[in-house]
Image (tube, rainbow, N blue to C red; front, side, top):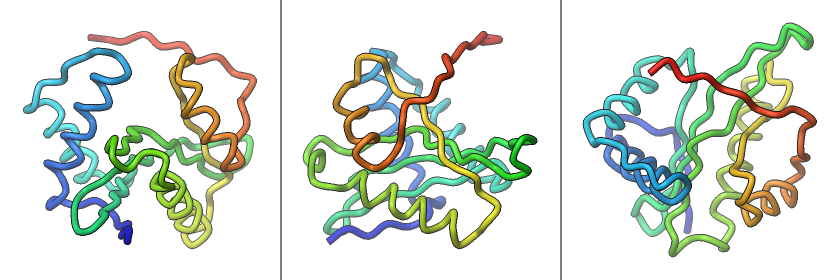
Length: 150
């Protein structure tokens, strides 16, 4: 049985460990414990910026995702960005992300003012792309650019 709930202080260690694992799997990047833990707590302290959903299977943390907000002046509503998606290897292919995404959609409808969902995915991660497409997402016509200030 899977239980999905909003992430809170009791989930910080699990969410931080998931983020560390995701950074290593996707970018071979090692995140310092202190930095990622502060980052997780930073979002929890700013609910106007977003929230975490965490999935528990048999009472153990099994996966999570983060939602952040982007105002769309074209729509006068908010896009929810799905970020920091991580599912423990033992739970992959078993519908855990599907359940998390269903909860995202349910919350968006319940809260209102949401015009859609966006996410970015590694170009090489075809498995995740197929899952997102299966759940109704389509590839956008935008490329993503960034310029870190660090």
